[in-house]
Length: 230
Image 1 (cartoon, rainbow, N blue to C red):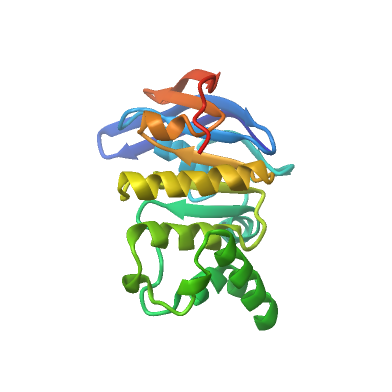
Image 2 (cartoon, rainbow, N blue to C red):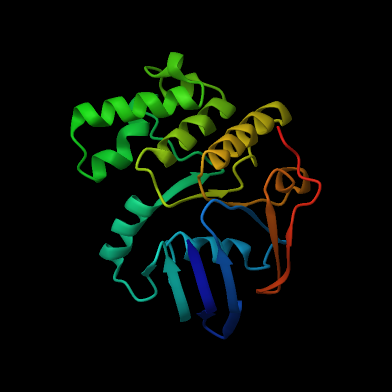
């Protein structure tokens, strides 16, 4: 599903030359649930941005769902992001002036899906995350945990190859965090491939695999033996 080889990423600003990723290589199979961990400045966020086609590498190769996306143009990458990747962010990234249902429909709107099909798929996605009774609400009328469930519903409506979650529980209380991880585990059990950045060990234990970054390189990669099943 995901195969990166010798990914190098540098940031050069004036006299500062910082190597964020040092020829990183990694494979993630279809159906895996992988947690990406590491301290601030370790390279994990840069790596996630490259996996999500939000940033470009300086060298190396990246295959996503069998397609080489290493050297695509920005407009090509935007198509890949919409078709192949579902995003879940710490800050939810919902549009405040439209309803929950309309927020979930957005990726399909950009993909040119007909209105009737958009509506039915969005309703089904919201049902899967337990929000059928909140479809007409605006984002400011629901809780943080519910906002993240909306974001998860939005991430899966285009049936992406992979769901990428960046600190999805970072703004949530413990109860809401458990609810969100329970949804991710259910989606993974149904076949979804999930890559999640987190700094919380308890959250990482809900995944099946942990990849740890330090100073721009992978220093550990292991299966979660004492996995928490919610």
